[in-house]
Length: 344
Image 1 (cartoon, rainbow, N blue to C red):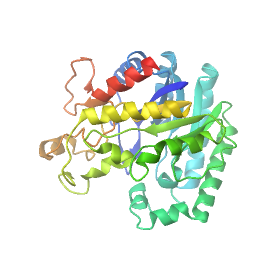
Image 2: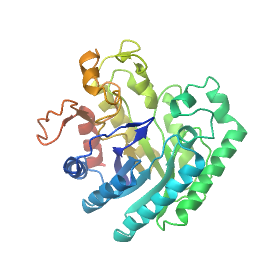
Image 3: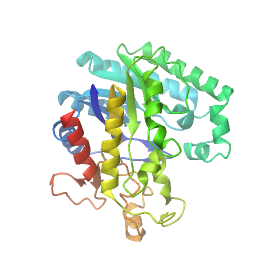
Image 4: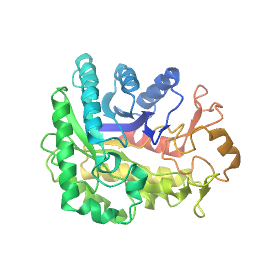
């Protein structure tokens, strides 16, 4: 494994909610220092919508000696709007590359079949995922052709402005022409029904003949979350007020840590070039925007249960004990990932 990384959210935005509403550069700088020194990463995947934030955090990460995988995300917009956004993002990435040659990789998109309008029916990603004919739609030749054409346009748009290496963070059911890309990228979580076939899935990407990067994978923080993979957040009924668990689920840091150690080992043994664990911190994701404090008093489960983060955020802004300057505490998964990256 050449690239040992973690995903880092600078402010992803879904349906009007910013997942990182409070953006304190002092905290950001310290978190990246911890990612480099204590988590033993040599790369970081920066995700978010605001190009100014992405540029600023990229500079901090580059100063810390990390390779930056610049991953701008414009969710639930039209294809022309997304193309224009990627054009601007590519120019920003090129500016970073000029200051740090060979240290910036640009991702032209993330799971666009789900997150961009016009490939699958639906006004937003939740509507697309809820479509009863989702499986039939994603496997259809017309959908795959539409996806391939759009991703190719993204690659051309980026390549006209950015002179560094390119990738795209696909999802498992997307069929992409990897010709324009330097790295095959896939957000490959492990979960049912493919749980036991995970090594086989990795092997399919390795067989494509280019370096493969697992751009996003992880596990929520409850017993049995490993069987749900990238859909662990669905154990909460977010449509109710207050939000409620859909069944009996138990908060469990050990299960998350064990699964991440297993996933890192499987990816490493398969010959994956790089891994980006999802995710370092989730300070704002999940709880209803603008009603976080109210929700905290009403919910009957640990708000960290449906989260993938390696650290447990404190919504009340109190500080941790391991890092007294941070509003979070490392979880067992933090130490599991740190140990693997240190020793491999």
